[in-house]
Structures are given as structure tokens and as C-alpha cells.
Image (cartoon, rainbow, N blue to C red; front, side, top):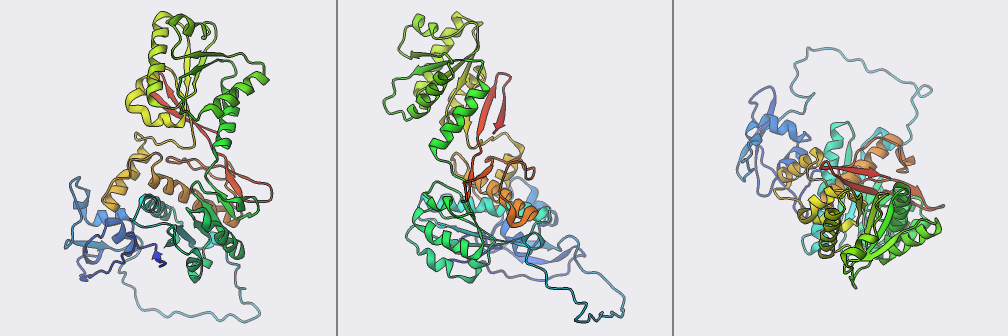
Length: 463
């Protein structure tokens, strides 16, 4: 069964009803609200069309670290800034008469001049991991809409639960779906054909957030696909590796991991080095100290590439390299890793810094960033839970996606194509840069090198 959610609804499958005891307690307070079960600060602010900050300002106790919204609490609802009771003197208002000859023509519908109509078509439920992850992603979209409102961008948001066994055609029959300017979804490949035809018929932009098969990308100009295939990521990583480390001496370390799937990258990189007549050496974790050291240059900086992304082998590699540095303290070594290494900071962070490590990725979750900290705090306030401990964080992904596309539509209308430099936006976690696929849709081509620097700083190098 299709669920229809308005922007003011935060928890799925639950429609909030509210008893409000109106009381004119001050010029700034328009009434009182009695909290119902499962209501949140975010949801109450949305219900009354006010900012969270305005609600907290009217209820200073919410600023206390230990504050928790509870059923039965009575909170003050302020007037939205710029509105409220205003005394006016009686006056006569004369309505001008416009003759048919001089009447202003009906303007063409332009998304830049009104609220952006957004649709979310994802499995929004609590049945399995897919649903829970997509609920968090959806919550990130909601937080982006709240942030956009602060800079004057209005959003009319609709969401439909589209589980794997659901009938997408039923969702698309909802008349609200046809009015959307942009839709985020689907999660399942089998829903793509119907949705692709639908957005073409109604000139709607379709954002595919995650890894599904979408051959329609090659023919449908309305599609944005964010997910990149491993082949595309490998090719882009090799290209940027060759440019950034062209003056380095590459050293490949065989880690004896028979389960590794990194051979496509290391093989491709070695072929490109050979085609450019760039020398490199290959060594092994089981090699003797003397044989291991001979693979490294003492006159050029070395860039080390392992053929596995696993943490145990990485630990052994660092131990070997630490021994080499003890014997040859002046040798220059930089590590080049894999996205999986971002999960190993608890174990290997100091070595990442020590060896000037570069990690290619399509995202970077930085827990020390003020942007990240602020959004994680708001997530706790709004939804009374923490984000799932996953990389990338799904709520931050949803925030970045929504903020990027909705700002783009607001500024450029439906001509927005997500190309680099269309507007300045520093993503919290997930950068986006799109390129047109022939006569078809737009494919994301963003890539990062997350750089752990010896002075204990981390930078994100965006391509």
C-alpha cells in the first residue's frame, strides 16, 4: 500500500495529530502545544511552519544538554519571524481594475519562482536493513529542506514507501507524483523502467542515489545517476594517481591475500606505468628485510601500493615499513590506499599521518568537521537517535544530495545539469560532479583523495 507523506511528517506510517490550547501569553507567543507520543522538535517546528531555532528560542529549556521532549509536555509556539499580531488603523483599500487589454499574462510555470516539488520513492520502512538505511537517508533530505528554508528556498515534499515487492505503478498513479519537479529513487533495478518512462512523460528530474542497474541512463536525459561503477572509479583513480605522483617511485607490495579483489586496480595501474615507461618495483610481505628494502628508492620519494584492502595485511605492511624507516631514516615513503582504509582509523591513524597517506574515495566522513558535528547534533534532536555507524553516513548522504539538487533547481531551473562550478557548495560528506552520457542522462564523476598529512591534518582533494 502506498504511503503519502507531506513535508511536515517525519515518522513514517504515523500521522501526527495535535491538541493545542491557544493562549495569548505574549506578543511573541501564539499558543501552546501539548506533546504527543513520538513527536519530535523537528516535527513540531514543521507543523507550525517555523524554524527549529525559533521554537528553541521560545523554549529556552530545550538548550539544556539533558533536555528530552516527553509526552505531555506543554511547549510554547512562537509566531514565525516577520509575522504576528499587528495593530492597524482602519483604512480604505482601493482595488485597481485591470482591463483585459492590459492584463498581465499568466506566467510560465518556473521552479525558480515557487516551492520546489520533491518526491522520494524509496523503501521507507523498518522491516529490514534497506528500509532502515533509506529512512535515515530520507531524514537527511528533510534536514536539507530545513536548511534550505533558511536561505529562502521553499520545498513541497512528498514521500512514498516503495519496498522491493511493491508495485511502483500504484505509486506513480498518485496525481501528486506527476507534479514533482524532482524524484529521489528508486533503490531497486526492477522499478527503473516504469519510473524512467514516468519522468520522461512528465519532464521530471530523477536522481538515482545508490548502486542499481539503470541502462536507461544512456537514453533518458532526465536521469542523474550518483553511483559510479568500480571500473569507472578505478580508471579515474589511476588517471589522477599518474598525474599527482608522476615524480614518485611506485612500489607494489604483494600481501598474499588470495581473497583480494584489488587486482583490477593494481594490474591497470602497472599497465599504465609501463605504457609511460615509468619504472616500478614489486616486493612481498614475506620478503627478507634486505630484499624488501631493495624495492625502494633512496633518491626519489616512494609511493607504496598494496594489492589488498584488508586491515591485518595493512598492519603487517606498516610493521615492515617501520622497520625499513628505522634502518634508512632518510628514505621518503608515501602510502596510497583504498576506500576501505577509512574504516581503520582507530587502528592505523598514526601510521596514516606518519606516511603521508592518500586514500581514494567518493566520500569522506569527517567526524571532526563543524558541519558534521552540527548535523549529527540536529539529527539527535530531531529523531532521538544517532545515525547508523556506517560509511558513508546515510543521513549525511541524503543531506548532501538534496542540498545540491534543490539549490541547483532553485538557481538554474530545469536546465541544471550538475556540472562543476555551477554554484559554490562545500559538501558535508559527498561531493557531486556530473557529466552528460552522450545523448542520455548525467553520470556522477566526482572523486576524492583523502590525504592524511604528517602534521596531523586531513585534507580532501576533490577532482
